[in-house]
Length: 499
Image 1: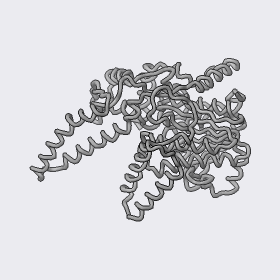
Image 2 (image 1 turned 135 degrees about the vertical axis):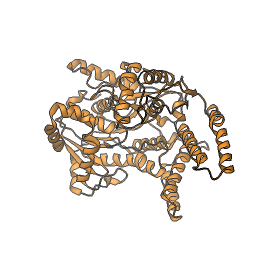
Image 3 (image 1 turned 180 degrees about the vertical axis):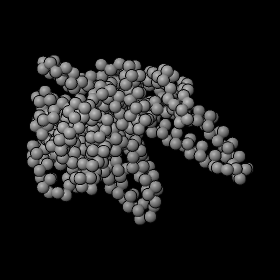
């Protein structure tokens, strides 16, 4: 184990972060944490998609530094001091991880980065389950390799921290270990070994065919999404997102050489537990979209096994684990560590329990509709298998829909395409349910012995230095009922619904 005091470790460090403006907020939360606890960090290079450095800084201010997340730091040190801190510490880099050296054209900037950077943190990712295959491969797979290759060119680089997802496990069940991928072990049902370069070539070939056929952008997007899902399922993954993230892990694991590598695999990321304040969240993913749909009164039935564990973890705990793992392993010899950051092993909560908590919350504190009336909620019909859900949808919606189609045929002069509208909505529901199925019926528990050990050492260090729980990521401390009722659901309403 290496030097453990995280605050001391961050002092005078130059850190590169990709994905600071990303959807799931892991980048923005780690930036706010570093600037709060260690303003004497030397420099933060932030790679942002933009035309030039000025546009990159403008985007960072709008999408990162002007967020509510920075209000605590703004209140603590004042607006002027915060602006000074950002101008001194933050270097915007207009770049794209899908290209070599991020496509940075300024050779002086590129050389300066490669001389100064101590730590590289890759948070960049696409997050749509059914992402276009070309986008997923460029960002999640080969983008990860581009970040690694840049890190290897940094003469002072002590570590690459790569943020993945726990669900790279695919649809495995039981206790899922914290171990790196062995690419040679990945074979499809026909026994063929996964060839990542072949996947890239296949995608490029299909994309060229589509362009040669003058297909519309919409048709190209649909075709690329279908190709991604097809290839993912062929090799044993449920969707394009986790498949391309898995291949990214494989590439950086195979090509890391002597560079210390830490892979953080968080589970479903939820709002902040405590830092910089409770309940901050950006955007809706997985379980949150279901909670919100229920509160709005639009969710009447859903596919879920009430006894399955919903593995959630607050985003500030993920950031704390990232910083602690970095401080622990930077400069270590032969490091290739994997950390599951979740709750299913030490402090599980089931989908059934979340449903009960949501019912109580929205019964007591209902949302308001657009006309100001209170939205009454009732218990959702929860269906535990895809076969039963499909049967329910057929009897409840599809058969009446056929009658509506018949009426539209008999009375074609009726205004509006009621059949088409309702059929579109039903198809959307089925599409969402199919995407969510691997997670709401998930039978795995994420072993977190590495993370548990890391957390125990961090607590020991904080006890010695009397600093309290500054980098806490112990899931055992979460009371799910209190968290969901007092922190997470109110956070969703404040920071997502009211935006």
